[in-house]
Every structure is written in C-alpha cells, then in structure tokens.
Amino acid sequence: MDVMPASVDSSASIIREIIARHGESKHELIAVLHDVEKAFGYLPENALIQVASSLDVPLSKVYGVATFYTLFSTEPMGEHVIRVCENAPCHLLGANSLIEALTKELGIPVGGTTSCGKFTLKHTSCLGVCGVAPAMMIDDEVYGNLTPDDIPVILEKYR
Image (cartoon, rainbow, N blue to C red; front, top):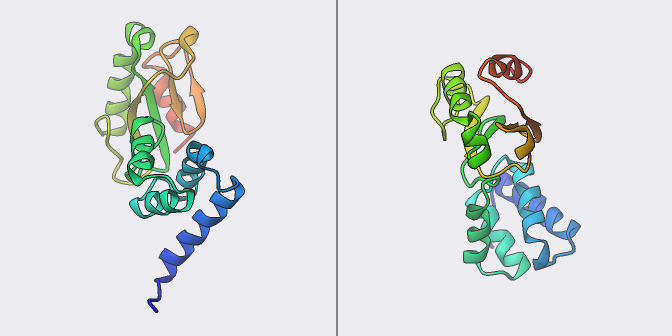
C-alpha cells in the first residue's frame, strides 16, 4: 500500500469535505470548484482530478469549467486578486487608464503577480456593474466609477 505525503493527504481530505458539503452532486460542480479555489488559492491539477473522480464527471469537463470562467484560476495567484473589467462599457469609459495605473503602481503586467506575492492583476469579463463603469474587483469587493487617481488609495487598503 502506497502512503501519500501528509500535504497531499491533507489536501485530499479538504477536497472530500468540500464535495460532501455539496452532497456529492455533479450539478454542484461550479460551487465545488469555487470552494476548492477558496481553500487553496487556485485550482491545482490534483484537485481537479479528485473533483472529477468524486463527482463522476469527465476530467475534460471539470477542466473546461475551470478554464472557461475568468473568476477561476488553475495557476497560483497573489494574496489579493485584482480583476479589471474589459467589456465594452468599462473599456469605453476608461478601463485602459485603470490598467495603466495598476501596472505602474504594482510594477507588473496584466496576468502578473507581484514578487512579494501580494497582488495578481487580471482582466475579467463583465462584473455586472455597467452602471458604474469603469469597474474592478479586488477579491470579492467591487469598485466602480473609477479614475486612475483612485488606484493608489484603494490599493493602500490591501497593502
């Protein structure tokens, strides 16, 4: 019998708990992936494999869901994830100027993570707050009606 390293066994246990909490239902795939990502900070490959097996869903479907939605990540991310809306209303009302301010302030390109691991900067699809465009989200907090001058003040809350 093979013995799994403690860290692998621990993560497997966490994933089993998450799946059990969702009734082991394949219809809860997105909710399961959300909770797995919350537990690990991203969706590691071994977690996707375990979710697929436990929910009796093809791995290709689990991977497809994990990579289709921009709020999921299969790569490690910073402690705080900044997502700037790139859809038309935000784009037309100044999202590019927000991106410029963020890349300057953080010293990273879109898709990058600061060397200290504090921030990851990403584009995202619509945040659903077009009435306050341009908008961005840091973790679960949405910010709207933004100008580049707002960026340093907002980031200071997360430093």
